[in-house]
Image (cartoon, rainbow, N blue to C red; front, side, top):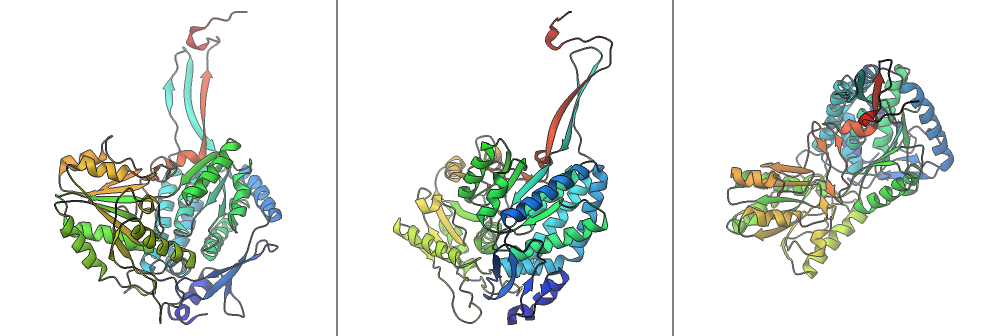
Length: 517
C-alpha cells in the first residue's frame, strides 16, 4: 500500500468495499471466474498498484449470459414495486458506503474526492428515482374505433441488458442504467472500463450482497471485465437485446453497426465538444466559475467538459483576462487532498493526447494563452499530472473539431447577434451539451428554440458540465442520440405492447373492412 493510499484511508476503503487485502499489499476483488488474464489497476494519483482482477474469457461469458437469461425469467415475474424494494436496499448500502466508494473512485480514476463523492451521490439519486418509478411503469389507454373494444398499451421487461461504461464515470453511468433496468425487470451484464476495474468489483460486491439477502435470482447483476474484445462478446450476442454503451464516437460507431446487424437496440452516449456562448449581457463572475469548472473539472475528462468558449467581441478581452487570471489560481495535485482543484489524467496515453492537442492547435495557427505541460517532481510521480491550458483558436481548426479528453480550452470570438454564436456552437459533429451566459431573455429563448442549440442538453446561465438525474441525459448527432437517467428514459429498457380486447359477440374489423363467411 503506497504512502498516499495509507494517508488517505484507501486500505480501509478497500476493506469496507469487500476488496480483500493480499500479502503483497495490493487488493484483489473476488474472482468469480479465474481463467482469464490478469488486469492490473494502477492509480494515476501516485502510480501505485491498487489491485488485480481477472479478465473474462469466452467460457466465462457463456456462464454469465446463461445465468442472466435464467435469472431474468424469474425476475421479470416479480411485481415491479417488489423489485423497487430491492433497489431501495441497494441504495441504503450506497449511502452507508458513500465515503469509501467515493475514495476508491477518486484514487483509481483520479478525479477529486468531492467529485468522487458526487458520483456516488448520483448513484443514490438515480436509485431514489428508480424506486418511485417502480410504481409508475404505466402505459396508455386509448379509445378504439370499433364498438365493444378496449385498447391499451403496456410495457414488459426487455431481457438481458448489456452495459459498457467508460473510466471517467466508473460507477455513476452503470447505476443510471442498472437502477432503471432492474425495476423494469431486466437482468444486467456490466463491462466496466479495464482502466478502473476495482470500482466495478466494489459495486458488484454491494449489489451481490443485497440481492442475496432478498433471494434475487442469480445473474440479475453480473460483471465482466477486459478490453474491447470482451465488449464484443455482448455487442454480437443476439441474447442481449439492448446494448448501452458510453465512450468515444469511434467506439460507438463500431457498437452501433454490430448491434444493428442483428437488429438489436443501442443506447449510445458518445463524445462531446461542448461550448459556452458568452454574450454582452452575461454575468462575468458566473461565466468564469462555470467555464473554469467545466474545462478543468475531472481534469477535462467529462463528456460534458467545456471545450470551447465563444465570446462576443465587445467583451472578449474582459472575459479572456478573467479566465486566464482564474487559471493562475488553480491548484493541481493529489485529488484526495480537498485543497486541490485538479487531479491527474487517467494514464500516460491521455497525457500524450493532451500534448498532441496543444502541438496541433499551434500548428494550425492558434495562440497559447495559458501554457500547458506535464508536471514533474514530488507529488507528480505518476507522470499523469498536466497543467490546464487555454488556446485562442478558430472553430474550423481540425483539433478544435476533435474531442480531446484533457483540460484544453479553446476560446474564440463572435460578432453580431447571438445567431452567429449559435452557428459556431452547432458547427461540430458532436451534440451533447451546450450553454449560454446571458441576462437577455430574447437571447436565452433563441438559444433554446428550434433555431438554437442542436445539443441534447442546452443550459442558460450554468455551464455545460454536470446534469441532474431527473432529466434525460444524452446528445444528438455523433453523440449517438441515446438518453439515460430521468424523464421517460426507462422506456428503452422495456418492450412496448399494444393490446386490443373485444368483449362483444361480434368480430368487427378495423377500418370498416367487411369479411363475412
